[in-house]
Length: 189
View 1 (tube, one colour):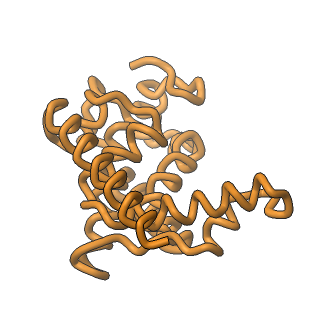
View 2 (cartoon, rainbow, N blue to C red):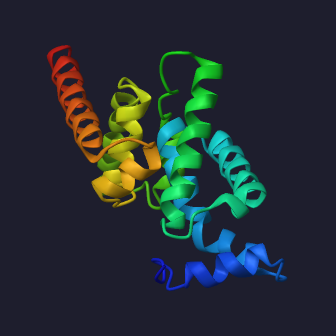
């Protein structure tokens, strides 16, 4: 296993965690918490729930680290855990769809909301969050892993425990549903 995006050799770090080396799990957490939180936030649209999901995911990682296969990427495994927790939470709350991003949530993500550019970005983010909430959770997760996390189809397939072809289908169906929803909303304006 090679260094991750943070430049940390994950295999060495995971072995250190398994051996109980002081501070090893904290380093693993620091290296991956932001991406886990981002995925949870995009999937749920709620910062408070994204925080909880991120914590739950790392608790599961800590308890299950001995079952992690070192031939896989840790980030892929973590994304699968985060996505599964998000899906479980969504089932508990609505049984059908994710809670859409609220304007206040997006405003927290935008540093300078005074400029026209920030206002436009906020409006687009609100629209995107709202539209994303209308597609099924598997397609939404695949789209977010691809376009937010920059994962390959193979990595997404591993995270979703499916094939690359299925990932491609989920992404294509999801993007088509997003386009259709945007067109539908445009007709009502």
